[in-house]
Length: 499
Ligand code: HEM
Ligand SMILES: *[C@@H]1O[C@H](CO)[C@@H](O)[C@H](O)[C@H]1NC(C)=O
View 1 (cartoon, protein in one colour):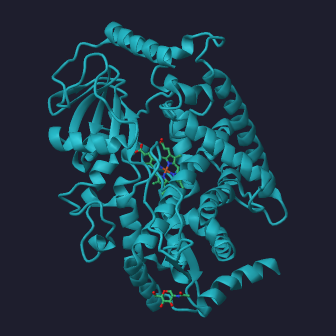
View 2: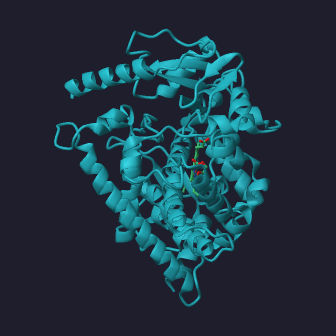
């Protein structure tokens, strides 16, 4: 491994020396680096280190990672100027060799082909538009009912239950596929796909993502095991995509006909190519799964740590929704405090803290030269943890969103989903899924600190994973129905389902 690292550094140094473009203007400011190595960026929570660099050097900085320059946007103002107003230049993605080798670069997050990207984004955005979402509302409702039932029956496994919710909803809306519960073999394939996609995106797991030249080495050399892993992942992804597509066509035709994003795309007036439909559909599943899970786990953590906030939200739900029904997404405008919890979750622990982009052409910003092909990182974390806008920035405090006008420059629901041409196309579904889930959990359960064998309260450490998507590390909490009427309310739809 060490030998490989040296090789990697040398290859990068060589590439940079050979192809270094003469800068056509001064570089933006940034932390001084070590020759060849550049800046030392910790593998864990790099967004926090970059946020601190931003405070020192400004909202638009240049850093060097193993000799490769990268530009970082640390403020909303610069993000709007570059990612929205100059989106043609700033909307490409960093090519990830492991993703490409695994055949996962098309139809979504890593798409680099402009035509295919346009079709894929249209397919997803129109597939889960506000109007379409209304037609999927009963399905979302039923998956959330299932979640509440699982919380009731096996509260200790709440981490698992939350893990399954977004993927079950996405498989349903994307393909019309109804999960048969934990252990469903096709759901397991979906999970494998989600996991392989996340691994193939990782730079720490696959050095080839940072040093593309490693891909030129023959497959029998040590250190090229990634090629075999990529081939296996590609086969799994292709098989899953095709099978899910076929299931969607069948479900769409069946008796009552269960429409889905895929079945509608196939029969839509827009001539979507099959290839694009297959690929973008799989990208909906990966786009929504880990992100939704992260937000909901952060919610459970925030509620465990802040009983007073939970109580305030429950009082609002009792007052507005009452005790005779469960909350619905249409209640959102009347539940400002629950909405504030959602906004604060997206600010306090945004699932995607650092968004990778790259340049599609040269640009000059504020006199600084930014070359075509350069890596650009959008540091949403820095924007959402800006102490001037969010005093006491690391404290979970929904009250910051109450009784104030929420402007674009501090709106976590704007910043947390990306900017301009590559903003999240599943945003409306994401908001509906997360908001409805948290409102329903609040309506019927008390989430409190668990007790250990000696009866002492367990305070969760509130640690997070570091990666493209950050999420709470499993912790313990206690989940109990709030009252007899809550219990009745959450049981009613489950009893209906089984009869
Ligand atoms: C809480 C949930 C979610 C969060 C926080 C989130 C956040 C994001 C972010 C930050 C990006 C990158 C945007 C950029 O480059 O500026 C993105 C891209 C994407 N998201 Fe989401 N997302 C969520 C849910 C979903 C859902 C439910 C779907 C499925 C419909 C989805 C599908 C996608 C796709 C396909 C892309 C790639 C778009 C492109 O590269 O052009 N996301 N998301
Ligand atoms: C749920 O929490 C509320 C407020 O803290 C409390 O009054 C109620 O008794 C709790 N319910 C249960 C079943 O513990």
